[in-house]
Picture 1 (cartoon, rainbow, N blue to C red):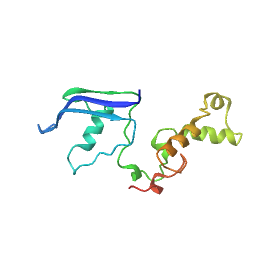
Picture 2: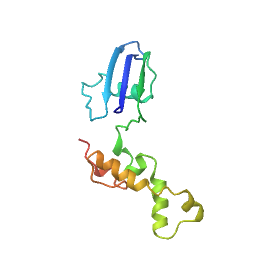
Picture 3: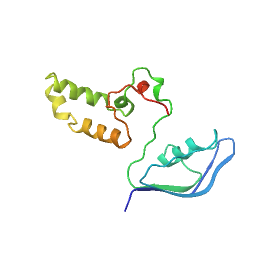
Picture 4: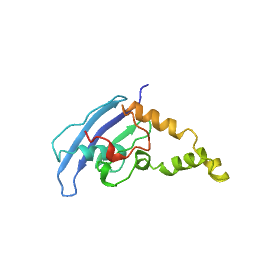
Length: 142
C-alpha cells in the first residue's frame, strides 16, 4: 500500500470566526503534489493542520509515515545550512571532527554514521544536487 495522507471531514475556523475549511475530504498519495491558491486562501493553514501544528475544529488527518513542514522564511537566518534547518548541523559537525581525527570517544560512540548519506539521498529525491552543508541563501526560492 503506497504512503498517503487522508483528510476526513476536516474543518477549520479562524480565531475571528471565519470558516476557512469546511468538511474537507482529501487523499494525497506518495507523489509530488502542488497546493496553489490566492494569498489568504488557507494553504499554510491546511499544511499546518496536516502536520499537526494546528488542531482542526472537526474531522481528522491520518498519515502513513512521518509528517513535517518546512518553514517559509528559509533564508532569514544568515549562514544557516540545510543541515541546520533540519536540526542536524551538530551531528554533521561530529562526523567532520571524526573525519579529521578530532572527535572524542563519546562523540564517536554517539555519531550517526549514515546521516550524511541519508540527507544526500533525501535531497536527491527532491531534485536538489547540493549537500547538507549548503547555505539556505544559496538556494533558489522558486
